[in-house]
Amino acid sequence: MDYVILAVAKVLGIVFNLYMWVVIISALISWVNPDPYNPIVRFLQRATEPVFAKVRHYIPFSVISGIDLSPIIVILALQMLDIALVGNLTRLAYGM
Image 1 (spheres, one colour):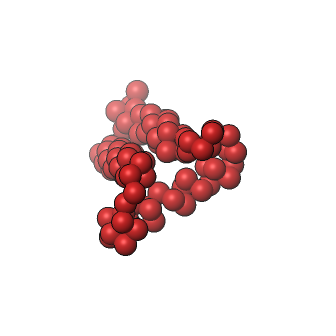
Image 2 (cartoon, one colour):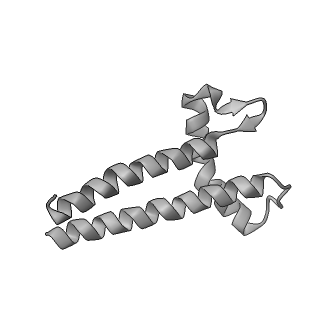
């Protein structure tokens, strides 16, 4: 059972890390004028825009002077989830 918990913790850590990179790439792409019909750009927008919209809705000060800080808030939330969930699952698997 310990190996299953440890495997779930590892997979969650990888998923959080991958989505963090998707958020970073999406934020970097938004600084330039990307082709909206490019499949990579469309994927990045479909993968991140719903989360960014929720952050903008619940935290209205996430847009300051036209600068959207929602990617930073999402990255911080992902890091907190990674530390809380993956760290606790790993400790649970090792019996600490």
